[in-house]
Length: 147
Image (tube, rainbow, N blue to C red; front, side, top):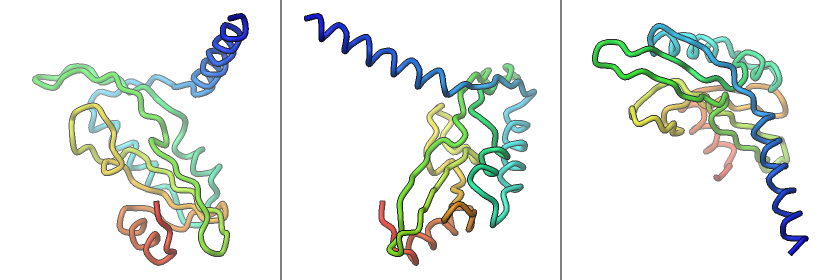
């Protein structure tokens, strides 16, 4: 019984530390379009050859986006993780591949971010090799990487 309680507390502490380590800054925008413009400008600033650390520096940390109610549009208060999704793998030659998906193009206004609403950034051996859905699909096919 004591071990179960101690284990539960230990798991709770680990979970709490994990959540706390993913601090999010809060940003206010006049419109959702203003947020999208800024987000897409950051993605456009990512160039081939830069490192994973530099990509994360350009894109910034997780943020809570606040947009006031405008006309019939609802107010927005949503967390964007920066990147929304990540995948680490290796290719046949054992090169390290990191794929980061950043929110860029809303499709469903349901508040749930999907990969189809994100721009993938592909990093091979700590160097950006390309970005965008077309590049990602071609890269996965030519490198024969399966997810």
